[in-house]
Length: 267
View 1: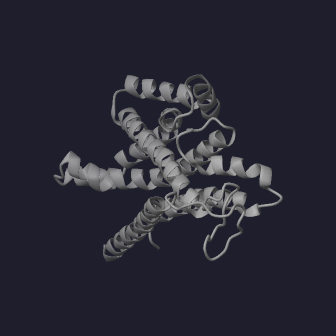
View 2 (view 1 turned 60 degrees about the horizontal axis):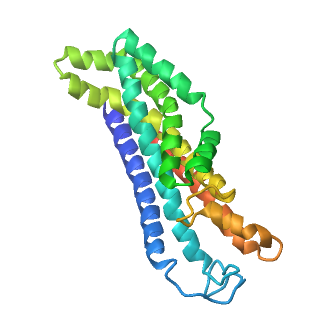
View 3 (view 1 turned 90 degrees about the vertical axis):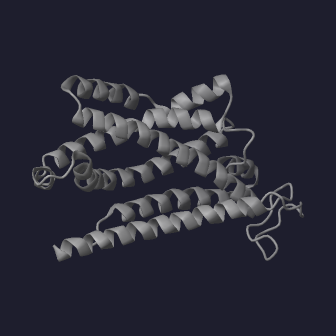
């Protein structure tokens, strides 16, 4: 029992550390955004140096500030997609696991139809018809990605319902709500969290792809748009594309690693 409490405490500490790092990264991005694009213009094509750590672009704009502004677009699309997919996926998965057989069948057939849609192709068609928008992209990606979360929640909930700990808690007089909070939700969240990180990275990549081909939100600076603007200068000003490319790769990988570590129990 002491070992179980120690392991649970270690797991909570690990999750708190990961959430702390994510909060710090979000704070840095928002503070950078506040100080970012407001800077004046400098000489164009300045390489990274003391005055401009990431250099300047062909218009003399500071690339560090532009990357910070692009971070806000990525966080908006990635966070919105994850929240929408988690909300629909958790609800559908719990209904499928806890509800009657017909609710299970209905939820899973809807998941089958949603997962068959090519999300990026649908996003391109929507952007071509209605114009590029971050909100439209969040809706398309969130409505296309929830089946992954729903299937995981359904499977984990069914396993947890049959567990001896859950049944023993009910037999000893624990309320269904308390038993669910203590023995049902932790394994579900531990299984869902790494996949939420993967969804976040996928949403960032999708937004960058849309912006790179000119179908992103024209009113927002994004990493994909900066990479597209740097394409004509790929041989003469490497820093113009290196910054956006590194930001996309590092952010997607960092979120995936942090969410995976947060869900891994301490050994």
